[in-house]
Length: 109
Image (cartoon, rainbow, N blue to C red):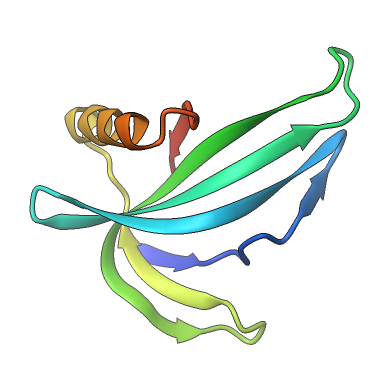
Protein backbone atom coordinates (compact mmCIF):
# COMPACT_ATOMS: atom_id res chain seq x y z
CA UNK A 1 0.00 0.00 0.00
CA UNK A 2 1.30 3.45 -0.83
CA UNK A 3 0.53 6.92 -2.02
CA UNK A 4 0.57 7.73 -5.72
CA UNK A 5 0.93 11.31 -6.93
CA UNK A 6 -1.04 11.85 -10.12
CA UNK A 7 1.02 13.41 -12.90
CA UNK A 8 -0.40 16.31 -14.88
CA UNK A 9 -2.24 15.20 -18.00
CA UNK A 10 -1.03 16.43 -21.39
CA UNK A 11 2.05 17.99 -19.78
CA UNK A 12 5.17 17.17 -21.74
CA UNK A 13 8.08 15.72 -19.77
CA UNK A 14 11.41 15.92 -21.57
CA UNK A 15 14.00 13.17 -21.39
CA UNK A 16 17.26 12.62 -23.22
CA UNK A 17 16.33 12.36 -26.90
CA UNK A 18 12.59 12.92 -26.57
CA UNK A 19 9.56 13.48 -24.39
CA UNK A 20 6.44 11.81 -23.03
CA UNK A 21 3.11 12.83 -21.58
CA UNK A 22 0.22 11.12 -19.90
CA UNK A 23 -2.95 11.77 -21.88
CA UNK A 24 -5.65 10.03 -19.86
CA UNK A 25 -6.34 8.41 -16.49
CA UNK A 26 -8.62 5.42 -16.27
CA UNK A 27 -10.06 2.97 -13.81
CA UNK A 28 -11.05 -0.58 -14.57
CA UNK A 29 -13.14 -2.97 -12.46
CA UNK A 30 -11.36 -6.29 -12.01
CA UNK A 31 -12.54 -9.03 -9.63
CA UNK A 32 -14.26 -6.59 -7.30
CA UNK A 33 -11.32 -4.18 -7.20
CA UNK A 34 -10.64 -1.01 -9.14
CA UNK A 35 -7.43 -0.87 -11.20
CA UNK A 36 -5.93 2.58 -11.81
CA UNK A 37 -4.08 3.08 -15.09
CA UNK A 38 -2.61 5.91 -17.15
CA UNK A 39 -2.35 6.15 -20.94
CA UNK A 40 0.79 7.82 -22.22
CA UNK A 41 2.50 8.80 -25.45
CA UNK A 42 6.28 9.02 -25.91
CA UNK A 43 8.28 10.42 -28.77
CA UNK A 44 11.95 10.03 -29.54
CA UNK A 45 13.31 12.84 -31.66
CA UNK A 46 16.97 11.89 -31.66
CA UNK A 47 18.67 8.65 -30.78
CA UNK A 48 21.21 6.28 -32.27
CA UNK A 49 18.33 4.39 -33.90
CA UNK A 50 16.52 7.43 -35.34
CA UNK A 51 13.19 8.94 -34.38
CA UNK A 52 10.01 7.15 -33.32
CA UNK A 53 7.49 6.83 -30.57
CA UNK A 54 5.14 4.59 -28.68
CA UNK A 55 1.88 4.50 -26.79
CA UNK A 56 2.08 2.99 -23.32
CA UNK A 57 0.04 2.19 -20.22
CA UNK A 58 1.32 2.53 -16.65
CA UNK A 59 -0.58 0.79 -13.86
CA UNK A 60 0.07 2.10 -10.32
CA UNK A 61 -2.23 -0.53 -8.75
CA UNK A 62 -5.59 -1.15 -7.14
CA UNK A 63 -7.33 1.98 -5.87
CA UNK A 64 -7.71 2.06 -2.10
CA UNK A 65 -8.57 5.76 -1.88
CA UNK A 66 -9.14 7.89 -5.00
CA UNK A 67 -7.73 11.42 -4.96
CA UNK A 68 -7.85 11.62 -1.18
CA UNK A 69 -5.83 14.83 -1.08
CA UNK A 70 -3.49 17.21 -2.86
CA UNK A 71 0.19 17.99 -2.51
CA UNK A 72 1.71 21.49 -2.38
CA UNK A 73 2.04 21.49 -6.20
CA UNK A 74 -1.68 20.90 -6.69
CA UNK A 75 -1.31 17.28 -7.75
CA UNK A 76 -3.90 14.77 -6.59
CA UNK A 77 -2.80 11.95 -4.31
CA UNK A 78 -4.43 8.52 -4.33
CA UNK A 79 -3.74 5.52 -2.17
CA UNK A 80 -2.98 2.38 -4.17
CA UNK A 81 -1.98 -1.23 -3.64
CA UNK A 82 0.56 -2.65 -6.08
CA UNK A 83 -0.61 -5.57 -8.20
CA UNK A 84 1.93 -8.31 -7.53
CA UNK A 85 0.07 -11.41 -8.72
CA UNK A 86 1.38 -12.50 -12.12
CA UNK A 87 -1.99 -14.10 -12.85
CA UNK A 88 -3.80 -10.82 -12.19
CA UNK A 89 -1.23 -8.84 -14.17
CA UNK A 90 -1.67 -11.15 -17.17
CA UNK A 91 -5.47 -10.89 -17.03
CA UNK A 92 -5.45 -7.09 -16.61
CA UNK A 93 -2.89 -6.70 -19.40
CA UNK A 94 -5.16 -8.72 -21.72
CA UNK A 95 -8.23 -6.59 -20.88
CA UNK A 96 -6.32 -3.36 -21.50
CA UNK A 97 -4.78 -4.64 -24.75
CA UNK A 98 -8.26 -5.43 -26.04
CA UNK A 99 -9.60 -2.04 -24.95
CA UNK A 100 -6.57 -0.07 -26.24
CA UNK A 101 -4.94 -2.13 -29.02
CA UNK A 102 -2.61 0.74 -30.00
CA UNK A 103 -1.11 0.80 -26.47
CA UNK A 104 1.05 -2.31 -26.51
CA UNK A 105 3.57 -1.43 -23.80
CA UNK A 106 1.98 -2.07 -20.41
CA UNK A 107 3.93 -1.68 -17.18
CA UNK A 108 2.87 -2.39 -13.61
CA UNK A 109 4.54 -0.03 -11.13
